[in-house]
Image (cartoon, rainbow, N blue to C red):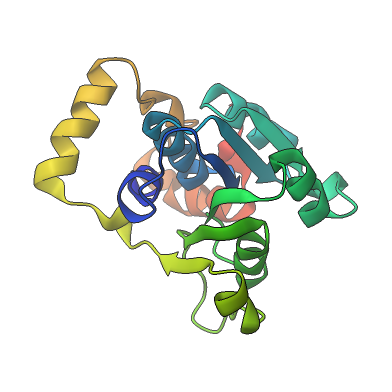
Length: 193
């Protein structure tokens, strides 16, 4: 539950917050649940695939934006959020999306990089924005998990029906189908319900 931990441990999302989650795959869906469990009142899922956005709604997203159909994604996000998000989560692993997550924040907001990128991938940000806008950019490795504290909490949420884990499994593969499973993962095919 890397994404859940990114919201609850790394960002420490506060009740009543506005959150934007870039990427509605497994990590993004877990992040949405973390934002919901923390009490965020607006959770916007951003992705380029309609079936992923549909799943995002069932996991707690209050709003969805299809980035493939948006003429100006940042403008659309700022309008929807009333000037910017309190928290934004990059769950894809791409530097350009890290920059979008940072840019969609209100002054004083926090962006968390959850997705793992290739070693040569980079992010470009306006340096002055760190001082003038007082935004924070941080990373989250395995959701900043503290097993003794987090695992009992996650089990309790799951048992209470407040954490969807079974629903994250969209397809099962036999061991001999492992190459196909990795190919489907890379192509985004295994996220369809």
